[in-house]
Amino acid sequence: MPALFELVLLAAEPVVDALTEDLLDPCHALSATVEDAESALPQESALFGEPGVAADRSAWPLSRVVALFSDESSAQAAAAHALAHHGAGAAVRIETLREVAEQDWVRLTQSQFDPVPITDSFWIVPTWHAVPAAAKRVIRLDPGLAFGTGTHPTTRMCLRWIAQHAGAFAPAWRRTLDYGCGSGVLAIAAALHGACGIDAVDIDAAAVDAARANAAANGAELTAGPPELACGSYDLVLANILATPLRLLAPLLCAHLAAAGHLVLSGILSRQADELAQAYAPWLDLTVADEEDGWILMHAQRSA
Image (tube, helix red, strand yellow):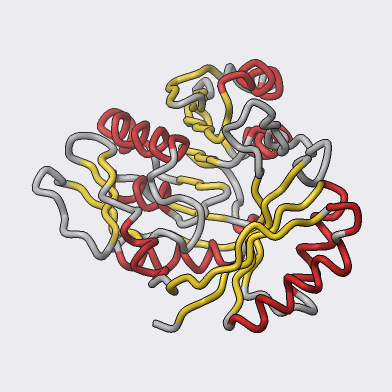
């Protein structure tokens, strides 16, 4: 594969945004990323807020800006431009300019996803992997199509809840809603465990397409579409999003929950349990049903 050229700049906080924009246009970088130049040092500082909370600033006190170029002359021209337009007062310094081998990014990404055991017998298996001998029930998935590969704790907890409770409750899951379906993995898992009448909805058209494709690949019957597709009552409502939208969606999700129906929510940090419970209190008694790596799954069942 042809080589690329990497330009690494150290930049002070006030110039980072404009510098990054200039590297992309007019300097024609193939990509530009920003990271904390003081990461792992005593002076390291947090930048991004928790979900739903805006960051207090747009860059670290000292950032490392990494840009890739298709040839050396473009990288050198970009370095000169950065110093000329943003380097006053030592605001920008060149750390390195070097040749790097181009990666096979598809293979590199695939290598990061191994089969994921949800239970001893239920696994999420990327399409390029062989199915493990222990896997009796399998979802074959192409990671990267949309959020929901089974690797994140929030997704694993939802999948685990479905697998552990389907034996007792799946016969009653005559209608199922996966709200914010992403890749469709939760809806597919529900279908494979006996749920029926499944609607998978998402505001992202790419997620809807991914859910349809993944459902077809796994022989799962579901209907995927925008949120407007959801209508009426459901015996099982799944939503793996984030705490802020889940709080705002409380009236809607509760309105969709049938008598004796189960509501399963994830994408919630442990410290957010009380605020979610309070948001749903007018309708349901929401409690923590699982916890993993600082994330929780919350569950409620409507009275019959």
